[in-house]
Figure 1: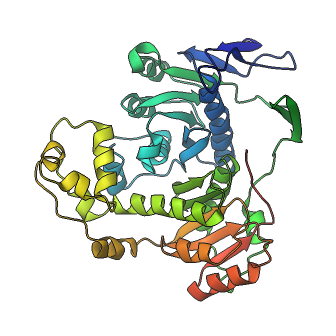
Figure 2: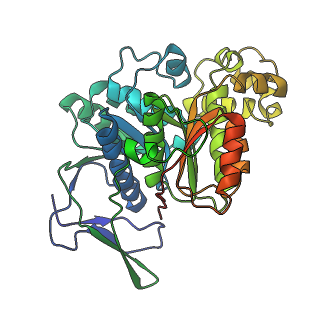
Length: 394
């Protein structure tokens, strides 16, 4: 490992020179095993690594995340997959999956449109099942604490041998003070070393419903850890150990809630009989298939069902997935958990979250309208915790 690494350019090709280095003079905590990662690749890699490391520490289960433009498109722990999830994540043909492979399938599958060209972070040594899954996805690179010999060879075959593979020293501890320069001015702050845990959530449940089961508590923890590394404002919907909708970088809290809720809805709609029965033409590319499903379940469905277009995608023309049918299916999604990186200023966020099956919420509290937010939760029997902790990330 070296003290610095030269990069092709910064965020954009005109931003040269570019490099990463250790101001302390110590060695970089990473080793590039293959490829040549860029500036944004490394931002994604370091943020993603912190996220999965914390998920593993908090839950005791291996974790994975799929990063795009310095926010996670998905994050998950390695819980087993149902047959339905295997099918909608396109991994039902891969045979037995390891827990780590299940974690990445969940992280990648939550929002496949956003995960296209992702940078992956894995909490544990990359094994063969995970490498085989990564091999056939469009991805920029992966960071992990290690790789089995066979997994490394599989990954090296991607992108004509140029796929970015990074090994990180999992014992590395960063400095407690971090700095960055903006417009020639240096900003300094203490690192966000906040430990997100059960006690933070249990200590102040402010709604009439105070029952948060153990598995939902874990899902709330997953949502908050995910938000810790998501560009703010941000909201995260979680179900069964994985993020199912992340709304990142919105100026308005309700827009975060809507964006993330729409993604959660799409995740659920993809499990409907109407989508599972879609009969695609042989040889269709995975991204084209993902895009067709995304359009089919949207209000723009005519774009893939019009004459001359559907024949290019489907063997048989599927029926319209009507608004009434979608509403009926969405009502079956329940027990969803929701985290917010800052307080909800109005009860409209709760109204929107409820439509995506949210029954449990963790947010900092502290709004002058907290009473309205609590009242709205009580109206629907939602259990909500005020953590007292804001999780802005920029």
